[in-house]
Length: 536
Image (cartoon, rainbow, N blue to C red; front, side, top):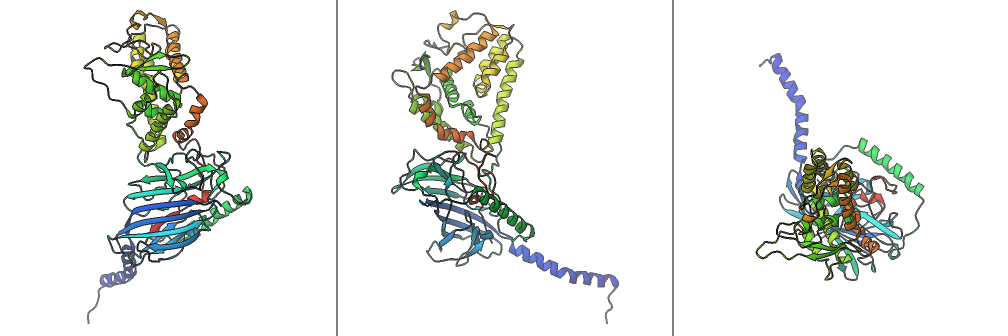
């Protein structure tokens, strides 16, 4: 008979006690799965009663782990009705309710294999998705956030959203949410549609889409008072809060998150030109267009022949053999606006500005607008510091000449410029300071200097010098276009996009369980934002 020593007996006891925990750890390890979302295509049809038809086309691939083959797809709001759930081969798939009634669990069949993509289609009807647009009287609007997959790895290779509007809506009457401008507008039969497409989209990042259009194209039923929605909102918040507090998370299933207007993970965008930075910093369109003009003047592409009552330009003929400077896309578009008599075509000029704004917004995708704004404000501040710290009038002028493009991005340019030169300072404007001489009106020689300015240079009090510069900028900006109101109307969508998220945060009149639902054009049923998905 073998007698166990006390230490041996203790080891055996501990081993027996640890077996259940080891089994649990093995089970958990087996349950851990990884998957990626290859595509998420969404098509929405807005119906005349304010409801939508919603179709998801989703492809995902399981990469590792022991999985069940169940995918959770979030719905815009409760009350939806599933029309069908099918595989790519048109086979009917089983599903059940999920996400506290705001989503479904789809069972893939046959069960996917590791590394093999699985595609399925969900078709649903969702009521009450359209509501009145309080920021654009006479309009109705809808925001839509495709379901997210926060537990997925990698990125979504192809994310697409297509919204088909009621028949009769035209491209001139639709607007988009702040920071969510569509990529294209086209026709789907007799109906207008707007379209977004992204590649490499983070699966857990909320994507914002939506439209605002004239109310006459839908018939919305009268709903309960705002107090009813408020009470319901607080009830939903309480229920969700309790559920989150007491529920045990299931591995592989995405958390139920509140929506955000955007998730920006790349920090500031630091390769913009001064003109593009002017857009990000919220510069007035005419000021930004003036900056483009100054760039063309600096490159000696155009000269100014008249400034009053309208600005008139003339394209400059370069000396033979001298290469032409490289033009940026917005400079090329600006030049297209010059008419034979020298005035600028308001419509083409507006298109140039909208094209600039669209390009800047596309460049900003994935970057933090707030961080980018702060970065370029710091660039402008550094430029002002160089000017103010210059010891002599000549050095101040040289610092201005070096930094004028970045100084113009500052919305307080006029006031700051006048404070740079104290009353007792006298300055001699140099012939090469093109930005001072009221914009060159004379033929430019090979030196880049207006041929008549050399005889105009004389000492001038600093305050007069500053006033002349500011007056020149204001005159140029004020006389760019013929009809200011029509020009402004053409820029409304671009101005809304350039304004960014900060202009509307905290101003939502929506009352719902999900906060921060405001947008520049459509105040909608915010509950539509609460949708999240996952796979297990």
